Length: 69
Image 1 (cartoon, rainbow, N blue to C red):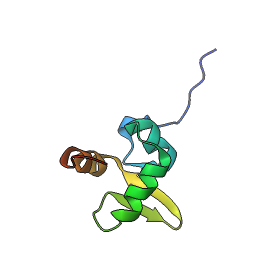
Image 2 (tube, helix red, strand yellow; image 1 turned 30 degrees about the vertical axis):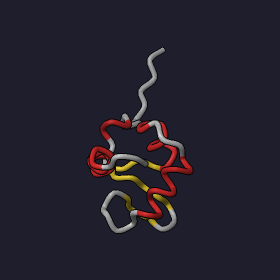
Image 3 (cartoon, rainbow, N blue to C red; image 1 turned 120 degrees about the vertical axis):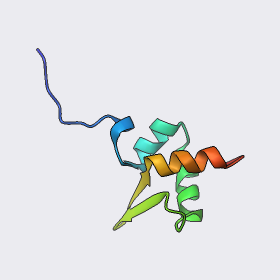
Image 4 (cartoon, helix red, strand yellow; image 1 turned 90 degrees about the vertical axis):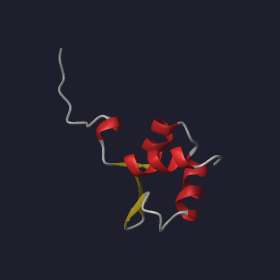
């Protein structure tokens, strides 16, 4: 049986939740939370109320520029 889903693949999403970002980037959720807290004004994260979202492309660019996390 072929089941259709409306899920968008992670590599096509504009923003990723904390757990999706951990899966996509291979970085632990605690470390991602720490990065988000320390870089609120850099444009790599969005807060939708209390929900934390990582801008996938901006975060990728940010990761390419840093030497260590």
